[in-house]
Structure formats: structure tokens, C-alpha cells
Length: 369
Image (cartoon, rainbow, N blue to C red; front, side, top):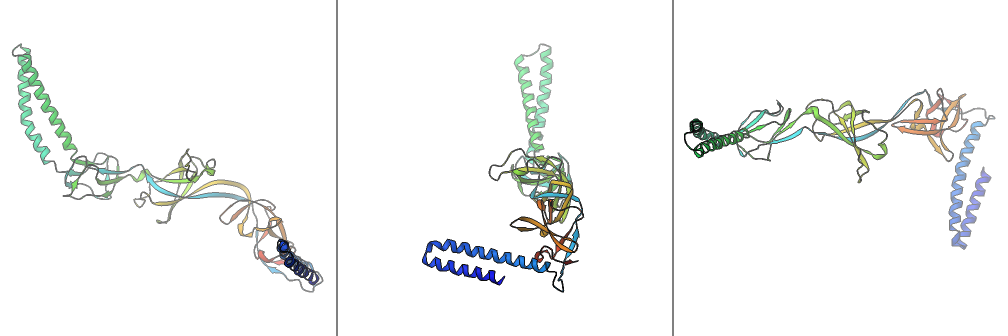
């Protein structure tokens, strides 16, 4: 081995001398240095293997390792993405008519029904107008009824009858308008749900379009996430999903309810929706969650810890143990997930592989475990 090293050094010195005479040989020098490094590594490996196989030595050094026996099992691969809590039943309620709020009938957290009054707006002027209209409508109704009887008896003119009728109907229309305005003086819930927020207090001004209450139906929550288009044929409606809320330290299982059919041209993703089972009012719109979706599964598979897989110029391999000696097993790796690697070929159920101490052992080395 010493002679080989001398040859390598002499070759390097000669190449270096030549590079001084001809700068164009700098590339050749770099190539020889690279070969020197590769040869030194090969010499070290071969020397270790020769030492391990040398039966003339009085003592055979053994390497202490840990071993695990492979068993056929199911391998699952998951894709994990971030999702956001959304709901179609998250409604901002505002007043339909301007006015001062005189009463609030609910508080935050209260359960409300569709059409239930949440607050009342000062409608004193409307009520006063209705009261004033009431007496005029009664008179107009009486005049019309009398004029109608006379007209049936051919007494009076048609003009008098039509004027009485028009006057009565006009006042009735005004009354209906005032009653509608009176209804709009109450802020009502458009859906069943819970009062999530109250933006106004008694004595404050309510205006159309200005938020007064937020009503949320917790049963209508869903998780919306985006998947890369490469997963379009790997996920389907009904696939099981594990939802994690890191801030609440909660996990819940659900299923994909919607798979988007359009690809976002900016980030090449498509949307999925997962219905969220009713949990509690701790879940809020826009809350961050994580979705874990199974996109690949193989039963009766050989699975090995991914950290035991090593690589060389010849490919990937794992050290197994046979007759208390290290055996290098060339393998082909498929999918990986977490700490597991799916072994497509090279290993079988019952094989004992080295799970600790594998980084500095060589083929044929004596092992103990």
C-alpha cells in the first residue's frame, strides 16, 4: 500500500511540474488530483475489508451494532398541507334603516334563530306617523263605504265614488309603507347561529351597511387548502383527512367534501374543502390548521428506517447481518415518509438489518448485537 501511495504522490508532483511548463495542463492536474482522492478512498475501503477478512490474525475485532428484523407491513404515504377555517355561514348583520339603538336583545355567545330580533332602533317618528294616519284612514274608509253604497243605488257620480276609493287606497298604501319601515327598525338575524361579535351599544347610531352583529353557525365550518396539481389524480371526494389545530392542541378526522376542478395559473394548485365536524366555539374563521391526507398505500410491504439507507457509486444499499457478519444488500427505494422508506427490492421479510453502527462497518466484518 505504501508503494501505491508513493506512485500517487510521484504522479501528482510530475503533473504539477508539467503544469508550470504548460498552463494548459492545469485541467489535467486537477483531474489527477481528483483521481488521487478517489484512489485513496478506495485503498482505505479495501484495506479495511482485507483486515476484516484476514483469518491469520489471532484476534478478530467485532463491531457492536443494533439489529432489527424486517416484517411485511402496510406502508402509507401522506401529503401534509396548511388549511384555513372558513364558513359560508359567517354573516355580518347591519341595520336596514338609520337611527339610534334603543335596545339590544342578545349578547355575545347567545344562540339565535333566523328572523329573531337582535336590536331595536328608535322608531318614535314612524309610530307617530302611523297613529296620525290611523284616524285619516278610518275616515277615508267610512266615506268610501258610504259612497260605494250610494253608487250601487245609482246615487251620486262615478267621480265621487272613484275619488273616495283612491283616497282610501292611498292611505292604506302609506300605512303599509310605515309598517314596513317599523319592521326595519329592528335588526334581525338572517340565519340560525350564535352571536360571535356585537359591534354596537345602546345609544349609538346604526346605519345601513355599518356592522352591528356577526352571526356564525359553527356547524357550517370547513377547512380550505391548496394542493399541487401533481396530486390531482391522487385525492378524491370521500378520502379521509386528519385535521390538526396546533393552537388548540386538537385533532379531528373528517373527509374531503370538494375537490376543485380548476388549476390556479399562478401557483399551479387546486383547492380542496374538508367539512369540519362541530367542535366548539373555540374554532374561529381564518384559524390555521394542518391537513394530513393519505395519497399512497401499499400492503404487505417491506419498510426500513430511512436513515439506514446508504448510497455509493453503485447505488443504494443497506447492511444486513448474516452468520454474524455484515452483508451489503443493494436495494431499490420507492416512496419515503417520515422515518420510513419503502423497499421495492433487495430485502425480504425476516432479514436482519443493522439499525445502529452501520456507518463505519464494511462487507464481511464480524458483528455482535
